[in-house]
Length: 212
Image (cartoon, rainbow, N blue to C red; front, side):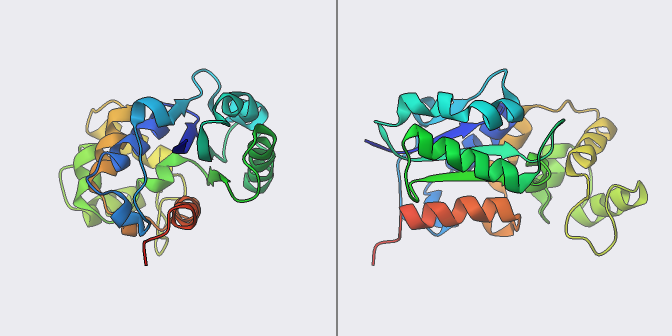
């Protein structure tokens, strides 16, 4: 049995997790015990399905792996055309996990509100570098506030994806999964305060506790 399967909606999510799990002793930044991860075996990308497809058909992608994985994680965005909202998505994904064979607490649904780019925004020079912004993070935030993407006193942009796309346009840099991989390989996990990331982190801590 392998430790954990990760089912994600698109290449950008794949890049984010690939970057994070490529770190040496990545489990230490999560506060959990070590577990095995091989990008070639333990990651499934629902090509052509994206978030709505996983909402309706995640169990179909999961079922072939139920006999070979102790745990499974499904990660989707909350915002897409026709979305029923984060809570409803989470409940549906949990049903898919149970139907596919991960009972009790052996599976985890991670719904990012509003979308993956919410994991990008944290006070780090690596964010500026990955997005091609020449300047400090404070200057990047100030520019986004001026353009209305970031409200004063808020911890993150209200429209995180649009904020990323605006910065990339200014730096004439195309959006690709490599940007997410670069970011996740360098920024600290402790700096990500997003609730969905904490859901993922908490599940991994439960499943792979630190040795006493």
